Image 1: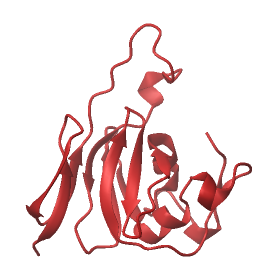
Image 2: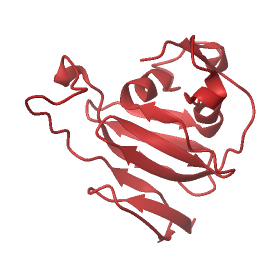
Image 3: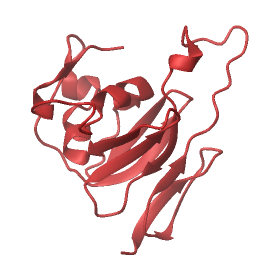
Image 4: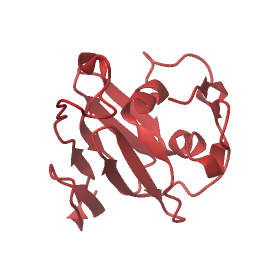
Length: 154
C-alpha cells in the first residue's frame, strides 16, 4: 500500500517523499569526556535501530539494538504524551484520552529521544528512548490493560 511518508536519514535530516513506510535509522551514540546526560551505564541505554510508521496505520514499530521489536499503538503514544500540557509538571505519567492519532512526523532529539508530531500540530512531547522501551505494548512487555499503567518521570 503506497502512501506519503516522511523519512529521517542517518544525519537526522527530514524529507517528505512518496513511499509505503516511514523508516528511520537512528544515529550512533557518541559519548565523550564531559558529555552531559551520558547514561551511567551506556550498555544499558536503549537504542533504536529502525522505526516503521506506515502512513495511515495506527501503530509505530521500533527495532531496538538489543533485538527487541517494540509495538506502539498511536492511541497509547498520544495518551502517554509526556509533555507538561498533557501530564502537568509533577507526578507520574498516566494515560489521557483524546487527541489526533495521525502521526505526521518523527524527529530525533539528540541521541536520547524522539519528538512525535501529531496531525493536530501537537509536538511538545519528548519521548526518551528509555520511556519508549517501558511503553512497549508487545506481549512480553505488558500484562493487562496498557492504559492502566503509570510511569515515573525520568
